[in-house]
Length: 298
Image (tube, rainbow, N blue to C red; front, side, top):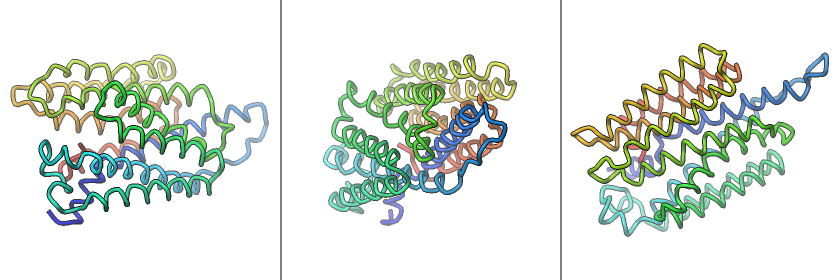
């Protein structure tokens, strides 16, 4: 394994399209909140999307990559036994390099966020703190599951804050909670990923709850949303079958749950009728599935 390949593996670059997909949900929430905020006006003022979106995607990717690097740096000794094929145990990347890279990306992300706005900087700092807490506590399921759920659930909040705190709406909190729930289930199932048993496999079906909740509360009249929910259900069934098959393919199951972030995002976006934005999340889903064939996402 080359050093370049080692860094790509450590960064879990194959999962990065799901971060971009999450950002698109934040855009959809912002557009929806902007329309509601100015609903009583005859003329709605323009909403600048492009520049804040590009900057906040960079912020989120840096945060995500820093978290991945922190995990490998913290687990270096443990991985010598359990995951000797990881870049640090193989000697491709030094632990000191990983820690330095992680903190560099974390600091840069916070600086960029404060450059966008104070609110965005504060929400990004809060997310960075949770990422660090997860790094040091992720071997205790009592902490790892809720902390990872908070990490992912905060993504929507960070994105919306990059546009304006005026767009903090009930829809934002509902979507953030739904994403956090999905992440909590995924994290719980992931704790059994390397075990040759399927005792956590039935928990996979709990990932349907946030999607079903959003469809029922927001997108019940949209045939596109219902169609996406059916596709999402089939995808989760496929993930579940990987976990409980005779061949025991938990990595494939985890990959489907990870790429499922983007499918869930499609449901979120479709539920508020922003179908043109949903296309980007569909592309992110396809990119994630393709990338998992080359680089592991776990």
